[in-house]
Image (tube, rainbow, N blue to C red):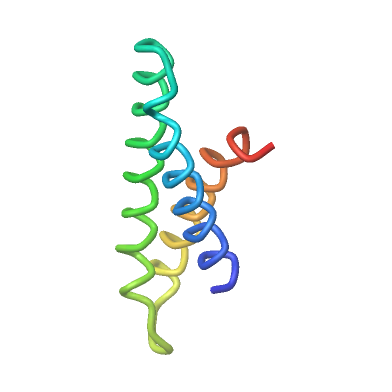
Length: 82
């Protein structure tokens, strides 16, 4: 779960940083950043939705979905935090 929590926290940081810098960008850059923010928000929510279903009795299918969602979010965030 620590990997999930780390990815969710990182997504929150990226979203917050992007939103706080929107006003200083030109129109084209603003559209690009807004697009990235929307995609990160979507993947963050997908990961959160799966995480909420996790319990000690969770089956492998739910855990596999969690792994897929965290991987997708990490892939989206990787180039943004370098």
